[in-house]
Amino acid sequence: MTWLDWLALTRDKLADTLIFLGPYLAAALPFVAWCAWWLGAVNWRKCWPALARGAWVPVLLLAVVAVMVWARLQATDYPLLGLTVPNGWWQAGGVAGLVAVALFCGWLQGYYGWTPPEISVEPAPHAHGHGHHHGHH
Image 1 (cartoon, rainbow, N blue to C red):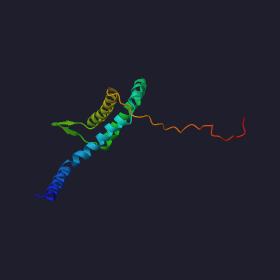
Image 2 (image 1 turned 90 degrees about the vertical axis):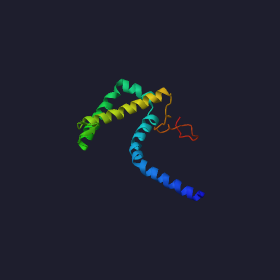
Image 3 (image 1 turned 60 degrees about the vertical axis):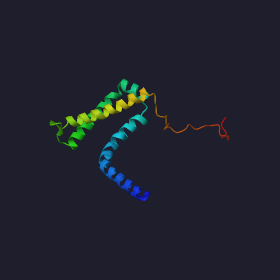
């Protein structure tokens, strides 16, 4: 077997593996993006106190609205381990799971002491010491 034969065989095996794993990787991508957002874009040192002061209420309302919309858009029962989970309840479990993962990411960020960098979205203040005079004293 030459190295070109080995390279072709490796390419074929890699392609077969990607074809097999492709649907699973595509299904995992939104979850990975969700975790990346809550770990890398949210400053949980500021978020925890805001939630404690009452920001949990809009989060809860948003979650309830998400459940209601999802239950209307995908109005089906969900078969789970031989049981049937009624419409609305399995969507509530999914949304609660996503909220729990977000909160876990916040705990993880605090546990490891990592905080994303601060990015200022405010424009820079205008400095007046730029060398020319406007005639006002």
